[in-house]
Length: 270
Image 1: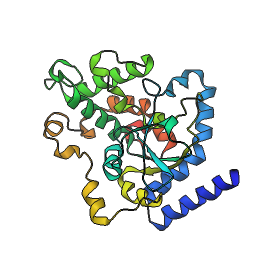
Image 2: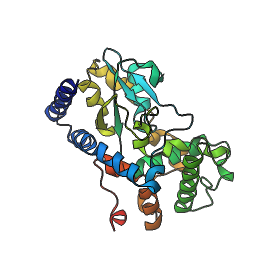
Image 3: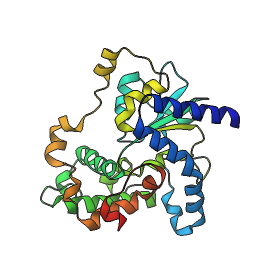
Image 4: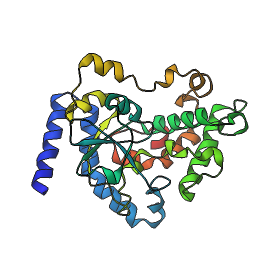
């Protein structure tokens, strides 16, 4: 089994290299090199164990990719809508995947957190009454309020209030990769971690076949830049965040920086 796994890993690295997918190659190499060490470190630090938690309801979702032995682990706000449109398949529960292997895509951790904030603001029934989304508050204050909401959600397993029910869209991406049946461990079915910007090429790497024109037609995804409400109410400009807010977000998503090949904002390196 180890021989087969090592052969498969080398084959994936070779394909990423041949397709000039540098970002995905870096994520893949780093993640599978450090994952066991990172998990061991977290487990050895009792105060850090809270960093490892699954989604509310203890359920991950994946999207089966037709014609392959793979399924896409859906990290919310990291490519799921695009894969859904490419495959015409809906969510499948983890226990229904059989022997399929998992792949996923990740994006800049702060961008991901803010994308979750915008998504939940868009979904909110009363955004003008919620301190995380009210337009009379500065962007920085709204984001700080959202971070408080999300952090409370992770510690309780449920939202602090009704409007926090979609908080997991801003959860650290690494927490979507945990094995929910084995505490403090990465899902052993996971074999490929790529960059969101290279998702279309990744589909080819795992064997998904589609005519180029059809691929372009289906792969439009849910582009927030074409969503008028998100553009007007939930612009995600990191330069408008204070150094304190950025540091707090970095602390919250710290495992994403440990696991994946992203560089934190300068203020988070101080």
